[in-house]
Image 1 (cartoon, chains in turn purple, yellow):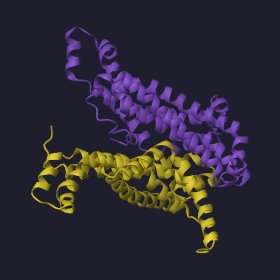
Image 2 (tube, helix red, strand yellow; image 1 turned 180 degrees about the vertical axis):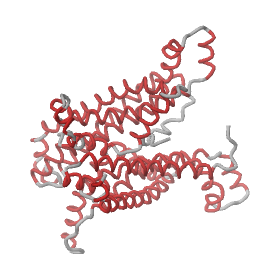
Image 3 (cartoon, helix red, strand yellow; image 1 turned 90 degrees about the horizontal axis):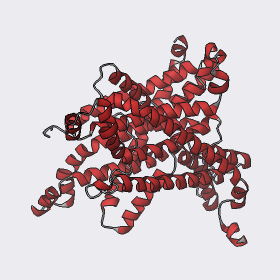
Image 4 (cartoon, one colour; image 1 turned 180 degrees about the horizontal axis):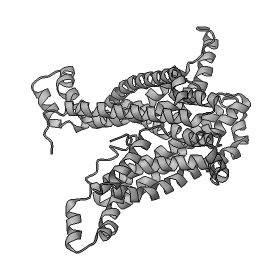
Length: 253
Length: 229
């Protein structure tokens, strides 16, 4: 063991000593990522329904929102909220300032939520629009109302169709959550940078962070593979295996 | 607004750096993507395994972590090699090189998948037909695979580019004076961070909207002669 530690290029004991900090970082990263994903998904459902409708006001309104948030970097969105909000006295004096907008964690959560909601909206809109016309016609023919159609026919199958694309969004949100470390939060990368800075190292903190992220992505992929196998079983034979599995989230398309 | 006009040269310099780093990394990633797609589709098992490991690694680790590893770690590694071999003295890795290279490598993985999918979308019979009339491999690639591959790859290419453009914002974190960095610095010194970050926000939006329009024009051009359903 001794010889192995001497031979190994990274200072493993140091990483082990600080591992509890990394675990706190994991909690911050996972908390921010999944909380914003959950809130974003909750926002995305009504927005996607509006986007898929031909409503003359709602549709362009939601389109503008998704276009703007998908057309700008998450880093800039987060900076705008965290550093920008303080420019205005009326915001600093408002009831929102003290508990929310002066806190890095809240700013990160709000920015991440708005960002993922924009991507999820477009993704879900695509899945809704792809509903086979016959299914909708059949629902109308059996006397379903608009809400009934959505609830019983369109949304359940749209959610299923959206699973593969949504798994990409989840992984990209995890990747995006590193932005939190740039506004002082101690997420996984934040702890890695702290370790490197404190002990004047080049690798240990960042490599530990990379490994931790890798493990989380691996776990997420596993969960989604299970979900797909369970909820998309009826498509199994037609699906080309893992063809579109590695694609960045939608840009503007 | 007056502030923005006062600091316009700083914003402009940042915008130029952002566009430069985006284009430089795009160049790397398209080259890597073509190599990667070739490796993934090749009969060589090692090439396939290497390409698979490459895309898995990139998908597993966030961009900023890799950029920092290359920037801070790369410097130490290069100097350790230099000291051990005596081939070079102290080197400093530039933020631009580290950023362009890392983002290029990251998006190379996404382009690999895009190009792989595009090549697979070409009907097998066309390639067989080419072989059967005695086309050589390069000729087959130039006349049959490439023109169609471009068309099939364009939507994915466009998406990748838009994401890549936005990812370059992260390079400001290691100190490259791009749009975000300059806007932030100007905002700090004038106590008007909202104004300047909003300006950066709008400029990025302009860049992506412009790219979007350009890509649509390209798509129309390359789908000429294809029937629309």
